[in-house]
Amino acid sequence: MGLQLIGQDSLDSQVSVLSEASTYSTSSTSSSCTINRGPHKCLAILRGQSLHVVALTLSEEFLYAGSNNGEIRAWDQPDMQEGVKFGQGEAAVKCLVVVYNQIISAHQDHKIRVWRRSKSQPQEHRLVTTLPSVKDYIVNFLPSKNYVQVRRHHKSLWISHHDSISTLAVGNGVLYSGSWDKSVKVWRLSDFKCLESLTHHIDAVNALAVDNPNNLLFSGSGDTTVKVFHNKPPKPTKSHHTLIATLESNSPVNALALAHPLLYSAQSDKTVTVWKMEEVDGGREKQWSAVAALRGHRHSVLCVATLSNLVISGSADKTVRVWRRGGDGVHVSVSVMVGHTGPVKSLCGMLDMAMGAMVYSGSMDGDIRVWWIPEDETDLVSSDDGFPDSPVLVNWRSSSNKLLPSLPSV
Image 1 (tube, rainbow, N blue to C red):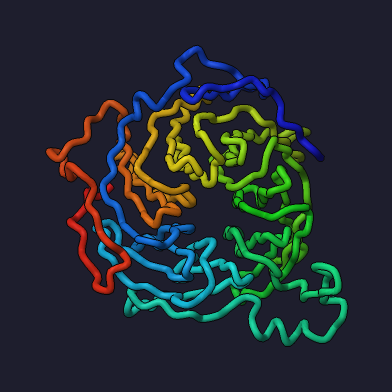
Image 2 (tube, rainbow, N blue to C red):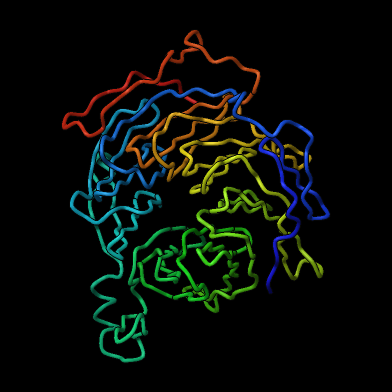
């Protein structure tokens, strides 16, 4: 079913309203949130020189960053001591996810690489497989039915991507990969066998998100839609995804994030659209409506993340914006974090309900910035609270590892 974006009334950059009637509301508060940049603190800057930081992800022990030269770097949590680097010489990293003791990276050379962290030596990461595997190639090589037309006079195995892999997501025992070749591949995590290829988009797939409790997959694309798939395996060891909804936005979708029952889509029209899921027909069907838009960015929104009731977005305008969602469904802009000199391409974070949130932003300027957002917006942040007066700088292109002064733990 196709769901249209409803209500086009402009929302200011301070407040966005979720209404049960699924319409936009406009607040009378000031439309400028750059005057009061909100309570936050930049704790550290990991300076990458000429590299572009295009992928970030967190594990319990490490912050991982992927760059355009194929390099993946790790920093210990929470003291931010630079650790291992791996993947040198591989194609540009486009996305990273962590699954148990494995780090999975998507690359511009159409490959997915799986790295395993040693249990005895946590700093050691080894490449264990590349997807599709050699075994899968051999099994699928001969039968002609395993080939699909990818462009004029050229065919490819259905199990492999034939363009840059832009996004990854994990849920319910499978790995999803989205590509500029317009497809989404489904890989079984137990043996990394390709189970399905979803080819419902007509432009590049830029974003994926998984709703585990409801067995749902969301895919965002340059074709201005978000596709919703239901995963109902015919057998426990197999996978079968059915398209159940198409959410239509006003511009290409660059990133997705979930905070059930809400879905956030970051778009090229400078907004983050808020979609709300509702169950109908006694819960047998699900419907999504666009109920709000978060405005304030001056250029395309490239990444979005959620931490409890916080919504965090990064943009080509070089800023990171933070909204707080209230119990009444109102989204209030609480911080505009400035300092990057290039588009913000990636975000991740961790939350401590007593202290607030630690947010990491990666940019095309080569820097990773570490931000602290207090739980109480009235908190004053100063060096007396254990925070440095100015950000700690470290050159992460240096050949020697350096230890950052310990950062406050959240």
